[in-house]
Image (cartoon, rainbow, N blue to C red; front, top):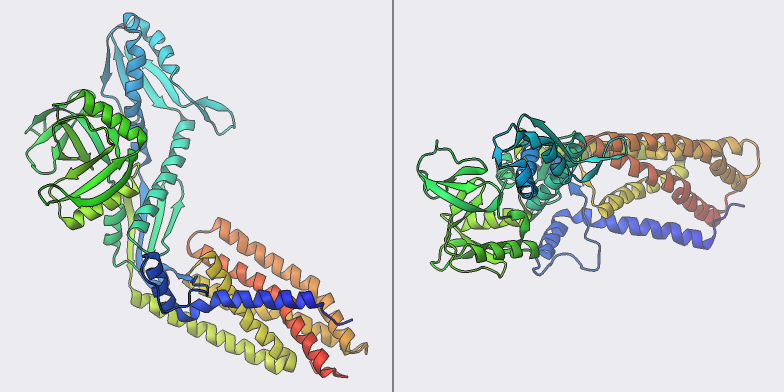
Length: 543
């Protein structure tokens, strides 16, 4: 019999109502956006009822305008930094065997290697064995475990490099850390829904809608903001001087003719920071207050306790911004950074320090600024395309199938609302290809209804009665509908997982459109037909 249980009717209409409710804020985009901004800022949010959903479909770079960058992370720098930090461990274990290996001294090596000369060349094999005890296991591509370092020798020089498995693991960690830090910096600046994705092995795609220029974005995320606290060995005014093995020559930020000789291995780094806030020093000049985590506070406190009366350098992005003398032990885990910067610079510095330092430098290969006017043109063109396609489908269905076509048109309107409701619920970003996906969905949405209505026409010719014809029409068209939509959905899934950027946007709207189309065709139009049939009780059907 042609009937639908009461609980199914309630479930179908409830699903439609919830989907349309979540899509509602997009009809009042500016008002809801202002409400959300005020809510995020912690101020009084007005202009939109708080009991209604306030999720919006985020507009992509090509619709809203903004900045686009493609950057390459210099992964090789991390290898060198990693091995420089490994030197103290190597030095300590070899010192314990000094009677056998002799004097040890760090040498200048090639990029990505740590080179140590030992005083007794005959003990080089013993020294290699000792250093290998510092190796840690790491998973290899074959699924087994291998050491994270490779120890070799050339004459009286012991050479330590990272293994290939460790380099691959380091690359993954570095890229994940870079993506997270870039995301933090962009979020700290208060921008909306950025797109930050890894591309290939060492590239990062960054798109920030609503930002004024690509240069502004570069200034925000391109600065390494690498903060270190290092031991001062000496000072010089000669930039071409040699710092010595294990040391480095760093220019003063306040005096271009002054250079500091610093120990390369830092006492504490910016990774140990937990907070940084703009403030003012005792002279009323802009400064930055900082606080260490437990580990950083312990190391900083121990160092300042052991080196009272000695200078230490605060180094930011390879420039000494301050080199104060330690007056007393600093055990509270907090301090202040002073320098020649204004309020804007101190605010920006604190933002960068809170977000963390990039593990490696970032080289920008491509940059674009998309103006909001171009984005508005895309929106207007998308609206026109949607309305033209929508109107053509509505007219065709009404003229071809009469009352049943009107039911299909109502379901199509609900379908588009459900698409926007789902996009709002998952926080998706709508791009120009995404609009193309919606336009394609509008055209495809009535396919299922066409199959059903044509099948009902065929069943009416067997004179089984209108109720039975409708029932058989939905039953026998179901397999064709599912087959057609599953293949299209699989194509959308492949586009999503294999594609990037705009292709993903198209795949998302196409995939969601398929789900909502099947739902509205199989359930929504059917419940409308059943309600109409129960009300009119027609003896014949005009499909």
